[in-house]
Image 1: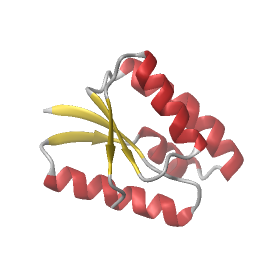
Image 2 (image 1 turned 90 degrees about the vertical axis):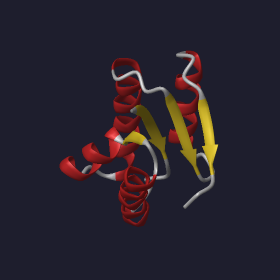
Image 3 (image 1 turned 45 degrees about the vertical axis):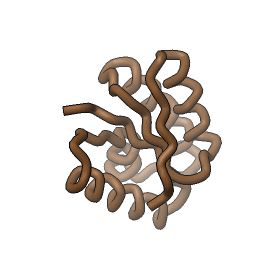
Image 4 (image 1 turned 90 degrees about the horizontal axis):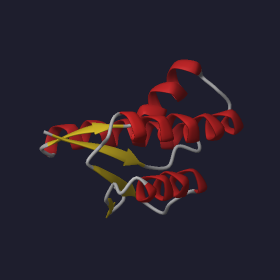
Length: 102
């Protein structure tokens, strides 16, 4: 099964809820194993938005490096945090797939 990193907005509580729903939907409908590691950190640690942005970059880079997803799927208009994930994935030669926002 293909491991894919999901990149989606997480700037506020509404975005976090959408990200959880996106993860569940993809897990049900696609033949892939989705991952959103920064979502887990945001929920477990309940960190504020500024700290969340900084930690997302670290968590994403670590996950992209160590878990070696086969693709990075981008949903919606890339935020600055998402753009960092895209750039880092490209440096690692991980294909970036732009998907429509759900």
